[in-house]
Image 1 (cartoon, helix red, strand yellow):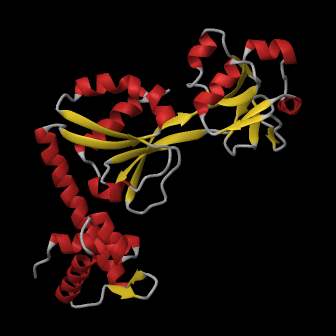
Image 2 (spheres, helix red, strand yellow; image 1 turned 45 degrees about the horizontal axis):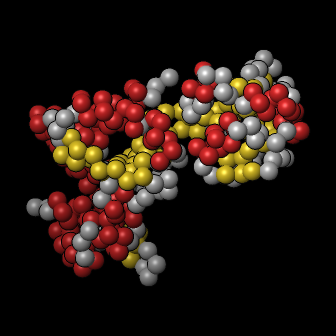
Image 3 (cartoon, helix red, strand yellow; image 1 turned 45 degrees about the vertical axis):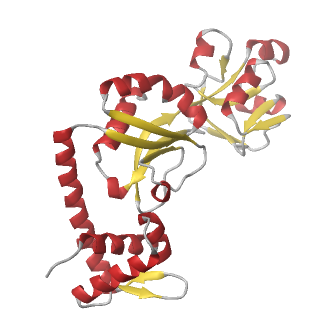
Amino acid sequence: MKYDLKDIEAFIYVAQLKSFNRAAEALKVAKSNITTRIHQLEKIAGMPLLARTTREVNLTTEGSQFLQYCKSIFNEIDNLDNFLHKKTGVDGTLRIVLPPYFSRYHIVPHLPKFLEKYPDLKLDILLDEDKVNIIKEGYDLQVRIQISEEENLKVEKLMTNHKIICASPQYIAQHGKPCTPQDLLNHNCIVFGENRVWKFRNLQTKKVTELRDIKGNISCNNGEIIKELVLAGIGITVKSSRDVENEIKNGEIIVLLKDYEVLNKTSFYAVYPSKKYKSQKIKAFIEFFQKKLAG
């Protein structure tokens, strides 16, 4: 009994996306191509694998079991590809989507060393803060601040984004220094986007304080602009410690509430299509920047 790998691939995409149309978009083929391949696969398997309705496509009981075998087949193919890539090295074009502000400070400065390490690799970079359908758009990887909930994407953590409370010396000289989180309610606070709830943990007592009534005359969705506002003495804000480490060293920004841990942590992740799992160029990018961004 012979199976066509493209039929199996089409089945995996339909099963995960629950749609012939979305599977066709992801694989960049006509819907009729997907329909034909699923029909061929069901004919060879001798059983219905998908239950179709007007709204979505679901797996039959047999289809769910069949899907596990299909995934195992592609995992073994990925392992074979990985073995072959190890023999040929890291080359070709890596198409990636990066968040502009984060990448300016944490990715771009390291790219010369990355390309020096992998001279046969080319980069095609799109800057975008928003989630991009990397499968549909043909990208290999995207750096995101949130874990993907899409079944057909793999996720690897690049960096934990620790936060601090900070202000400029000019602001503190004019308005005084807060000693507790509650003191922030009497200050002009600059809010990033919709992040209007600030949480703190006392390092000694472990007591958690949550502030929901943050007051201030500016909110902004751009971290670079917020840093400039802080440097200008406009107010106090929650900021990534890495984004302002140079300004802290230079005395342009002061870290406040050192007896408290800011709980508003975020992380940056690399997400990539599960179909490209263990691709050497993706693996090279992730491992290189995990090391560079550690600590």
